Image (tube, rainbow, N blue to C red; front, top):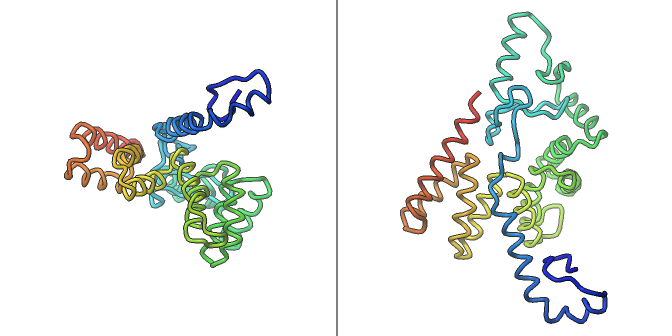
Length: 259
């Protein structure tokens, strides 16, 4: 059978090889359709998922959650606040609300925690160390950490690789790989990656595809996508019904993160 499109089955390898010239065009078209089915499917949640304590969906904005280096867990501000209040009232030591480890006092202790997590093959810790290297200007090290993290399924690392491939930092500039990792991150529920794909499609005058991307991102709570859809609606590029549905989806996503 053809492993790319799954449309044709052959009696032998020779039969398949002889049929390739006739099948190639149909195969490419079907492969593109299959990719689009995956690409434009609405994720059930953003790439961040739920707070592991209260099970409320995490906000897509960093100011609304905290990442703990001891366990690589992202916790919503509501749970962080409740834990701090409990510790103050009980005059308790400051500990992680999830794993109950003592909080690190210095940046060096944070790094040590992350490196221990990396030894356990933790993709989130790999991403965080990669970000530290990126901010230090060590783009090659950032690329190595993010690549390994992305291979282990970390969506944030996939998204950050688009920057390195797009700007040629730490790796040779590659637009195809930039687009590939943008799509992988978008499929994984990253709203910024999804928004950027919409912008990419708009630049190439594929407004229908751009609108689809922005609607999906809006349903994940992305403010920038709502702004883009508003402009499209004003220009008559999307329907009133689609814009209204995106507004409702966006508001529902924002409301769901309130803890």
